[in-house]
Image 1: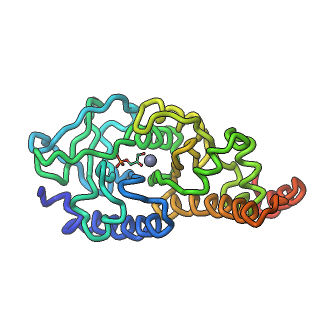
Image 2 (image 1 turned 135 degrees about the vertical axis):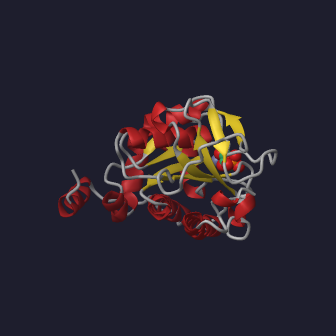
Length: 271
Ligand code: 13P
Ligand code: ZN
C-alpha cells in the first residue's frame, strides 16, 4: 500500500474517511444502498499533494473527461464495493485517484499496482458533474449517487416522468423542499447504468441545480461537502415518502398551493 495516500495514516484522508463512513451509514440505514448500490466522489485537489512520478501506479483509461479536470485528485468508491463496508474497511472500498494530465486515464494512488481496484462504474457521471462544477467555479466538491426507494418509485410513474411534474409533486409535499432546493430537481431520462449517455443526461438535467433524479434508477446530488450532498437527497426523499404515505392511506395529497410556495420564496429570498 503506497503509504502517502493511505486512509489510515494520512490525516486529511483519514478525516474524509470518517465523514464518508458517517454518511454511507446513513445511506445504508435509509435502505438506499443495497449490495454495491450507490457511489460517491469528492474533489480533493490541493488538499493532498499530487505525485510527481507515476510508474508505480495502476492506470485505467477514461472514455471522456473535461479538460478542466486534468491533474485533479478525487476520492471515489471502488466499483462493486458495499457502501456499508466503508466504515469498517476503508482500504477495500475507497480510492484516491488522479486524472492524467493528458486526460487519457486516471491513476490509482492508494493501491499497489496490480490490485485491480477500479473507480465506480458511474465515474463518467461523477466526472462530468465535477467538470461542470469547476467550469462554473462552484464551491461544490462532493457528489453522491444513491438509490432512494420512493424517489425511484415516483420516477417509475408515467405521471411524474418529466421535470415539471416531478418538481410540482415534490415542492407540494413539504415546505423544506422549496427552502433547501429552490431550483428544484432535474430529471434525467433512463439511460444504461455506467454509460456516457447517462453522464450526458445527468449534466443536461442538472443545469445549475444541485440534484437530479435518474429515471427508474436513483439520484445524483452535488454539495459543498458530503453532508450537504446527503441533505439534498434526504430532503426530496422525505417529500416522496410523504406522497406515498398519503396514497397508502387512500388519499390524494393536497400539496402546497402556488400562493404558499410564493410566500416561501419571499420569506427565504429565493430568486
Ligand atoms: P458501482 O459499484 O460500480 O459504484 O455501481 C453501483 C451503482 O449504483 C451503479 O449505478
Ligand atoms: Zn446506481
